[in-house]
Image (cartoon, rainbow, N blue to C red; front, side):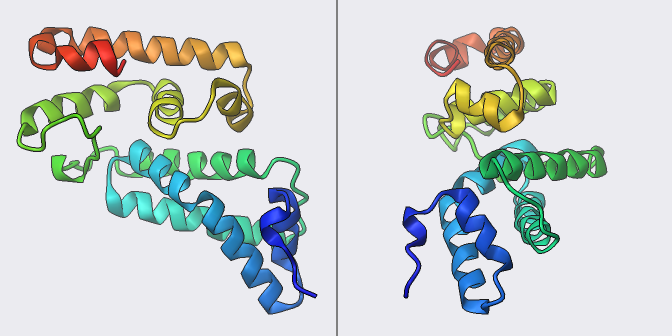
Length: 193
């Protein structure tokens, strides 16, 4: 009998990670990986602004998920747990690399920006990085990863109103920071923020 993992909830698939049959556990991991790897890596990349650090946090997140499963952790909200683990790892990594230089080439920006305009990319990257982590995190989840306000609230374990406030404040802070450059990035201030 073959398991239809694609029809199972995240929590049901997660419970199979600790299955004694190695192939079942492997298939369960691959299913969860296929469901979340793209968004999770993108989240880590946008928080850490560095490919190598993002890759480390991304891999460590999945390692911790497997470890939690083997320890018998019961899962009621897999997506929330996954983002919480990734968030904690990213915050720890940011603390470890606080004084490390970030290269502009490592920063992924919206496609509307011209790669030839490195100064503009650097200005926007610095502006994003200057936001408090709780604002930047909500903004990244909403604007770059296309989560809804309620999904963000569930993922972060906060009220919906807090998510709305954080995103609004992030946008306002970005506008304030980018205002001196508004002639160069006027389209961004109106359309992206």
